[in-house]
Length: 269
Image 1 (tube, helix red, strand yellow):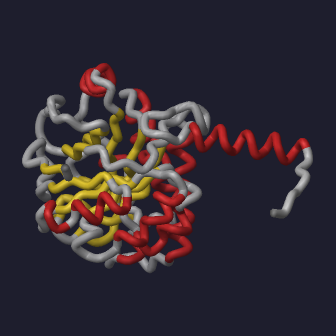
Image 2 (cartoon, rainbow, N blue to C red):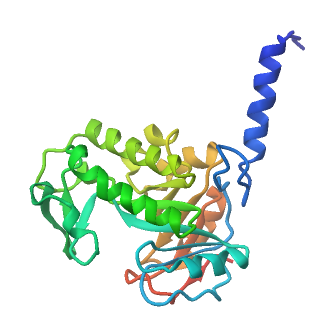
């Protein structure tokens, strides 16, 4: 067996690293400036973006809409021992949000396919869109959310009306993560499997849709390997077709409908 002598500075740094890893367990929040850092888990989560929040669902983690969820509901979920994720859009504009007028018309692109009330935005023009996006993060913080799930961060793979590059998307996504961290919350990478590995260091966990149906789950395995949770949702395939695989990957996987109402909610046994 080989032996090796380590310097005191190395041992101090190693001990600090172990402390950070120890703080990454489920529900932990001591590392990274007090942020909640969810570890890989198969415990159920709930994703509800429509209707009054049903706080009786037996899930450890809830994700709800940042605009429509009152602070008192976040407080109620906290009192029940739950963590709460704030859902907001950062890569698209929605004509039904109260801050819609803060986006210049010049940054609005093509309609988001399947969502006629949404349009892609030009993420290259950060100076023009930063203020409303920061305002959304401030709202999540004021309401007491533990984390943010910024949606539509893969415009470069879609027909947005703008010639977005992978590099420009990485720049924007990392800026989003920094802004959330500056407000003391953790941040989820939403989909974007092509860049998941490169964004691993900037994001605290992942929220993924239909990766079992489209055979993309392996792209998010680096998150689990790094001690970061992956919360996954399927819409079109039964739990019997994905639960065993989710368990093997340490993903928290559920079956929902596209409407993302309180029910149906099917979780893996």
